[in-house]
Length: 287
DNA sequence: CGCGTGCTTTAACCGCCTGG
DNA sequence: CCAGGCGGTTAAAGCACGCG
Image (tube, rainbow, N blue to C red; front, top):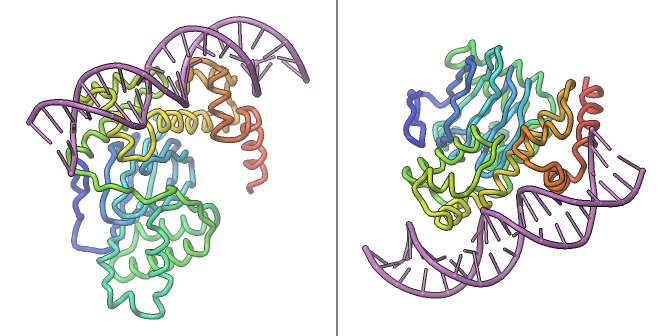
């Protein structure tokens, strides 16, 4: 799959592309493409940014990302390599006539529903099995298993990834700017970041940058940055061997604990320690 | 140690404006 | 019409303190 500055070109001449990534690091550049993307994290921990939202992922996480939605997977670096299976599907590639077939109603539904993208919350093991099979099939078999996959995903419980569809079209130049900004946040969120720094990074003045960022994300830069930091803190809090709240706050980029508590409560409606307790509880009762 | 809160300081960002 | 600069406003950050 060739990588363009901001878009990924249509790969080869097929409608359903299955890609398996095993690497220390996922492709960590903001990008978008017309294909709908179904991604299973087999192994790995990190964060997924979709448009203006941040989502933590861990082993077994499963996401469906709508077409033409900017996104980026970033995994935390460990000694073990991360593993992801992705299915790309070009909606137009299925053909309007084929989709009219009454028996393919479920596929139509899926294509309709996944515009905003969602995280799959249930039936993930069964869906994972189907995706694993998809890595080993060809041609018609791939298509059949794809249908099975759609069916399973349709009946699972889901959680929307983004609140509203991306509003404005993004030019290549602007996309490149956004790439730089998101990349910077991904790598420097644990230390102090000022508007001046990021604005300078993309050669803009601070107010110009603020408007640019808001126009494309419907969020202020700091709203996004804080969301990212909180998402990171959540992952640290969910760990069995978590460090102290103060340490987590600091490594998530918060200079003062009081501010961290305030921001955490505001976004999660529970205090950090409560959140950690609840996560532990649900992990124990999941299996 | 973890959390909330009121007060002060700081800087993010919004509206208004100009020039291209 | 759009991008960018300027300055004032306001929300975020930081600090101190108190409470369980």
